[in-house]
Image (cartoon, rainbow, N blue to C red; front, side, top):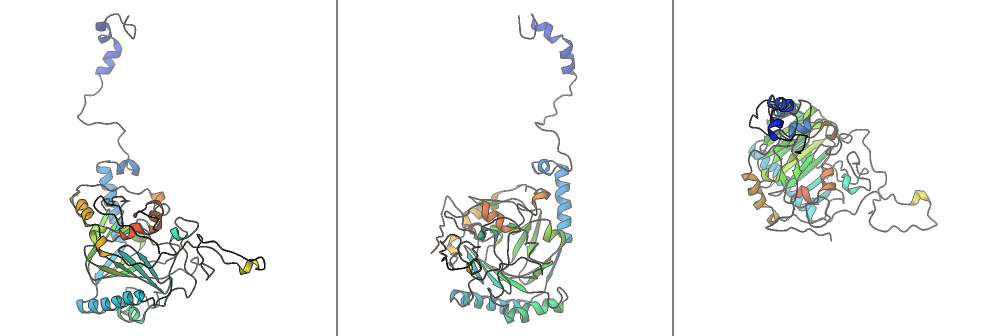
Length: 379
């Protein structure tokens, strides 16, 4: 007897169960392995939820725009004068004039902290978003007078920021192909707004991107903001707190520098010990020393002050990314925006962009490539 209790296949075809199957609507030409995503289901929307997905992205882009103020403030001559000062900062750093924690180097991107500097989560024994700490007072150099005179004063005069607002200035100097991965400026460290001024060349700031590495790939942004030389960008509200921002490697085609002006919170956590000893080095403590005399081991070994090599720019991968079209970004779940992806340090911890264990390989763009490998070594 045939399976299902039918002796003849014709009996099965004429059964009542067969009539129920015929009542199913005809196939409409689309595969539907899963149920249609709902408006609030971000995970399914990111996988391709059609109109609901597009509406979600457009709504998020509107919220980002509402938190951005941008204006062209500095003339070409003013830019040239400021860029000369930035070159002087680079030269002084190469000569070792600045304090140890003022200069932070990575492949294709150097940071120069003034006024206030802070540790990245990957430098601490306890990693993760929210673990950033300000350096002890005096561990970084003061804000140069030329930044006060040429940049901050003009912003105050145009009522972009109030007088006395800025106590932290960071210069990010990018080589072609450099980048900074998706992050939110630490909310527990800095007040809002966050002000940045761009120099040397035009670039772009992207919101809501997701980075992948080896080779480096960046998803389509929720919002793409062109950033011109001499322009001022002010981030607040949703654009500063609720969505990540980044600089993609394909958007740095020429050298570019940005001066980031911020104010630290009065309750921002700060490292207590001024003697920051590497946790990877053995610490020998005599029995005669009291607990108060022992150094607090809080940081990993500081990266060497190595030079960024412009020849290491991954131009073949930039061209490869330029050819990609219609890539959809994955909208980050709301519960992750302030946790897993809240800072640039998260990506340093989870994704290596160089062959060795470099802490900031991905920021500088030093990633593996079938064409060329860039290997940075500690000295």
